[in-house]
Image (cartoon, helix red, strand yellow):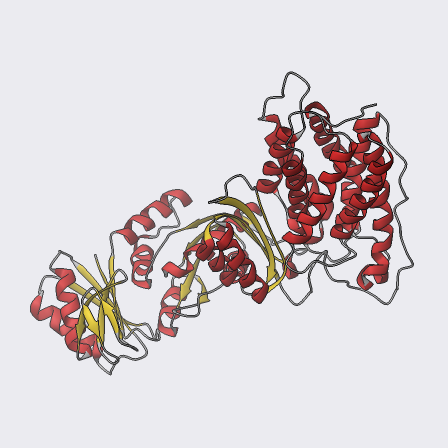
Length: 541
């Protein structure tokens, strides 16, 4: 029996917590009757704490008896990096709150442990954009309250830990009376049940035996209720978005507000190591996945992006390991026909209407192929395509993104595609062909602006090379011809012209005639792309 929590006890608690969650994993998973991965709370918590244990294993133990802060900090950071689902993110914040409080050099007595649990519970409430009672949050607060009452009576950490576990179990039993969905389903909150398991493990480590806590509560199930909301948030949002983010606290405040506009179940927790630039775990339920990821890009550097579509979670895709497929983003009907003729599954998207990660993931899965190449064809689609590929790879498909920034680069990549090659070799050949294709666009200015080529006025024709305005003209044919001349001045043997929805009749043919006269040894291909806003897309190889 221990009267205080030290470094060694914290390490034993982490190991005991992993073992306990593994033992109760299925039980906790079954508390969620909504068939989506975010509902697999037992699995999410086990994976989160396993990540904490791996981080702790990399942190050498302290030889002499010392405080638990160092071990808890390692656990908190590991949990943050590996947090899964809403409850996993909250537990990582709980560990961080304890670590931030128990910073002293000596072991933590009962009063210090109670204070740490209280600080951790409040930190969890602050991390959730719209905290709700009847969840893991209210269970954490219930544990903190009973822990503080026990600390007022006894200075021993064991007494406080036992009280905390008991208070958590009592708060858990109240959750069906706090959330109607739980009452109808006849279950307690799954995340709260996982926290009870962890606090039971802490008490067991300090006392050497499993303490008695309130039994797992169940209430009468309403047989007419077939589906209940997921673990957190409302069913109107179809995607769970989660990523790690390198950003400043001020930027995260803005991000939190933006995500609240996009959806619910917004939880953002940080490691708290650097006041200037910190690591955060971002979690939200949204419909517009692209906007959620873009908000992260504006706040800092998102990575380990994870997107799950709830509606598809319980329907695994049928994949033919030997099949090859292609997914391409198309901004116009003509380009769609070109890509479809090459056997691609086409996702609609263009300027101002970029497809979401969920849409791209659905297209990848719809191919049913073991190996898939994705052509985003727009710089703004790159992040979503990469995230979709990561999700598909996690489900067993081999997916590679060739980072095409324009449809003309995609056409160059398709020209060298050969399904008889190994997937990786084909990807390399396609990527090389795309990279060797310089791309340009012609559009019309909609407002006055200062560009590299000078000040443009509304209605001016703009020529862009790889996203940068290089010329301003007064009419479309003159501007497009000059743009092509500039590109070919740097060399080139093949020019691909894709005319848009706003191009005048015969526009492609007139440009082809200009090239034939000015550059007689250059081959020219003209396609009707039908893309909006850009009368011309051009590629030079």
